[in-house]
Image 1 (cartoon, rainbow, N blue to C red):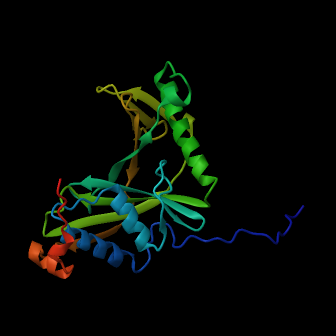
Image 2 (cartoon, rainbow, N blue to C red; image 1 turned 60 degrees about the horizontal axis):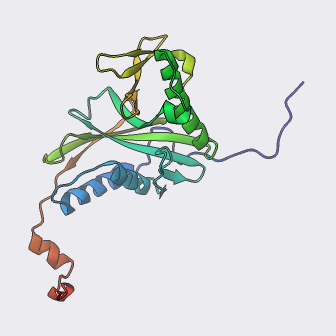
Image 3 (cartoon, rainbow, N blue to C red; image 1 turned 135 degrees about the horizontal axis):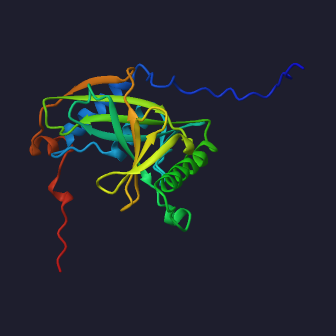
Length: 246
């Protein structure tokens, strides 16, 4: 029997194909980084700032969330954004992404009595989080900025890539405790280390490959502006300072 033809079809398309950023993207990101370097004595490009810059670069809405998987929203699509320090942002082949605090004792009221049982609980928490976000959006992605360990260099390298945020089949992974007492999730088929979970603090980390189709660029450090230059640009007036007696 042939399938019926339907009139109501969800035609929402992503703003751009996965990991193929818009033409203007790198110029907007680079401009924002240069502004940060020029306007701060001690510039730091951390998570919230990267979320804001990425949202601006794709003309989306920045909506910081507690879950961290939908901090940037554009129509039916959402992104979580991560920054990772790297000694070689252009050459990195994998990254470790801190992906939340998964606490089985809170979520299940008890913790399993085996390594695989604990790992299963940790992944179930992650999967529930992803399911809740995917119920709200047609597609959820994670966008990663690889940055140098310091922004003090005259020419700083950056790499940007993204991937679909997915749930993981619990049965595909084997868990074991390492020498530091943390739990590692290993792909049963490939033997690849994919997850780390710390019992103390419940921090959950996912190891992700860096795709070949990543976006790599350099940003040149702008000239430093002196205090007097900055104050002149903003039209500083001594009357802005009010002394309150007592």
